[in-house]
Length: 197
Image (cartoon, rainbow, N blue to C red):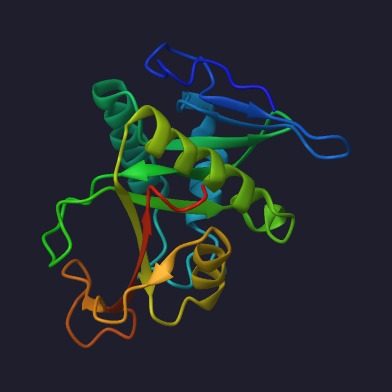
């Protein structure tokens, strides 16, 4: 495993991490570029990828989202990074400070979203492991949380594979999703720093 610039990811264009194992694809976490918009917008318009989100995003909404994600990394030095696999845009993973208020905020969450053609290859797991390492080792976080719609079993399985434990008392109604919406109910998972990350 090669790590590039994990202590100072603010440097423009420098990858946060680059991972390769024998017989595995090259995986890089990096800052957003303008050229990411087309595949990012396509991913956000894919009904299967967005099944557990309230709706699909237009290209304009994806462009605004990309700018917010890029600005967050520029300002904080970390965020939701692009996942690049063998130089192709695969999606994103990384750390985020949720903007909404809930019983567990403020906090740092891990999140991910991959294009469908990159599902089922262990790439989300590999990328998330690197983001967790960065959070615990470089940011010295004591805990990272993850949450998703209660119906999103695929993400819950990944959380559990990463070592997260379900907070049985942590389920909540996501305040950014309208009341009565089938995806409003969310489950909360937690991972403490002393766990193997």
